[in-house]
Image (cartoon, rainbow, N blue to C red):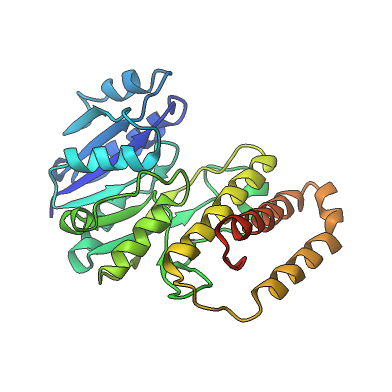
Length: 288
């Protein structure tokens, strides 16, 4: 099955070479194409990508700047793709050895797959060991009906016809467009399968304080996902559980002043704040 790898890119000059080098090292590269979808970079990202044209077979660098956002860039890349299957990876991550082959094999058995994520290689020790990360051993599932699985956009693989059937990513979403994408594909009748052999090394925010903002945005838009797909179904004691988490978080507030524990505490606080903001804005319970 010919596969097209789509990389949304915005001002990624510092990290894009590592991703392209990783794809260059993949076995069987002649059977896949790589599409860098530039979302309006003001740094040398496009020049860097174009410098790989003579080294990376079937490389295409396209303009995806009409609308800001990873969703638009991924959709532009998918429209340019010629493969029967499409795999998405981000410009600041690095795919593992054999990732293209592993995604290709997984998509021969499934219509929609998610890669295994690693957080140790590209991040400092506090990020790799001090914070709990999802998708290292399996898929995530939301805590509200219909309890669907979801995965990060970097490392998703899908058969082209499925992507086209559901209309691609929702370009109105600045966050959790990948979660929404996963939900819509599953609601269309296609299971999201975990492909542990397909490994992606993920890069986290450089500073612990940025984990707070990232978690806050994700949690706030999780409330929107709840409103869209939860269908108003009730969850047992959501506000009581949310209040208990506030209590637990504040009770161990001294972790904010400990270097080893600060990142996890900030991430948890960001999640709590975002859930509350989302619950009030979208009128849903604060459920993760």
